[in-house]
Image (cartoon, rainbow, N blue to C red; front, side, top):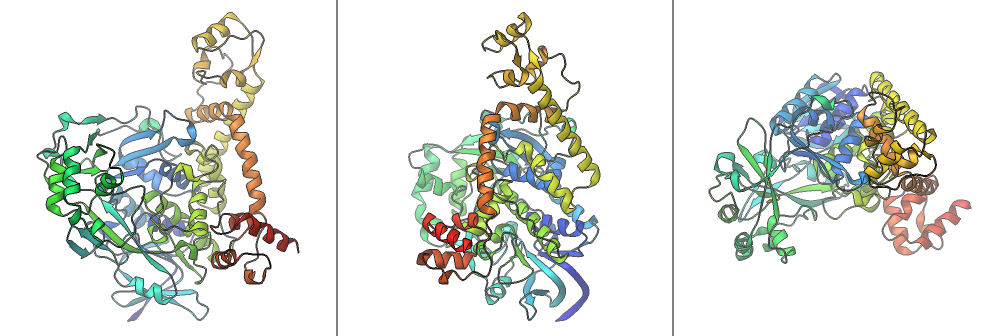
Length: 623
């Protein structure tokens, strides 16, 4: 072993989506940073599906961008098809999803790491985290025996930690796509007292495009009016470059699966890791939803310069011969040539109840966890955690107060609070239903909620902040104008209202009241609104319309959020001995002692802590 002459403020372990955001963030906050990847060719890999965003996940990407992260910008630079999901529903659940040119995304992200000041990029497997006498991080050690001094470390190992791929009776220690696993770090972390568990996820097969009969598949086109992930991206310069397709499983597919369940490692007990409930393998779907005669599958290109096609929704751990029979049973795939088999992958991760809301381990100073290492699934959840871990590592080393988003401010706040307060017994996936304040936490207003924080932290440059302030001013001015503009009951106005399918007015009505009516949109009101400002940006008009149309619902959620913040402001001292508090039930004492909540609000969300226990804590605080 030898000690490297290079000394760092922060070392990031892992070059996936969590590691990238953490490393870029720390370097941009003037920390001398190094990111280690077990294989530099696997940096920013997207093994499970070549897409970014989706229901609730699109919210996370826009929040990452609003805080100054990188995922949204790179997705905009490399997407080949973009769609806004759930447009038929209310704005609270609108979610952006983009099909990504996978290799181009990797190349762009890797180059951004390589050119970032204050950041070194190294290939190497980290096998040891070393602590000083105060149980704080002092260095990391590579498999080649090099020791690098650091003041903080962020573990973002993704699905590489002691990972194993499984295809039927075959299994092999490996990371995604045949990359070496991180084989030794798990035992070191256990020796440090970190609780490790075993999770599992899956990857679909890849098919050669030329062997698919696209003429019998449903086409899935991108949106004509593209909304970018990044608030910095000009939407006028974006265009779709690919068409995706849809096919379905059928009775023959299901029979092949059920006839071969005895060969499935998932049902035979060979897979011990816990898989994601909301992204099951195809054999799991067929068993769990036996009443369904088909399941939808998405045929998604891996990029523009490759013939590989993902068969999304068809992840499996079935034996190779069974997989081929399953694929050939699909419409359009009768002659499909499989380029890469589907596989399941097991990996080690940490129990997130061991973390503070800053994502720092409670028992080890300066050690942070991010991404799938914390028990989540998905690129977007990983990137969000990486950004927060990076911000807090840098702030701690600067001697500044931590940055914690609460549940009423961001989906990122919901994600982290769920992890560190409730924990998870399966790979955690973000969904809009997890938030109590969905109408406040829309993907369209992420910048209005979070850009101020990004600027104060130091991740949003002054030019961007200035543009943000202009946008916010225009929204306020146009909203107030509509609230103060009265439209008379003229033939022109009433004719317009009738064309919208709504009742004419008999007395003057405010523009904001007219806009609240069904089928009346801000864009259509231009027919009668002669005082409307010219060339108002589309994103400004969108915010004006949403804020007025849903004002009653938004105001109600704002009041609910204010009540929530009152409980969050009732802080609990970190040194409370819950075993000494009379009136707390035994389960509550155990849970509170383990999780050590920061506030009454957080304590109330812990499973096993009852309202009566919260009342006891309130009395205790008063004393």
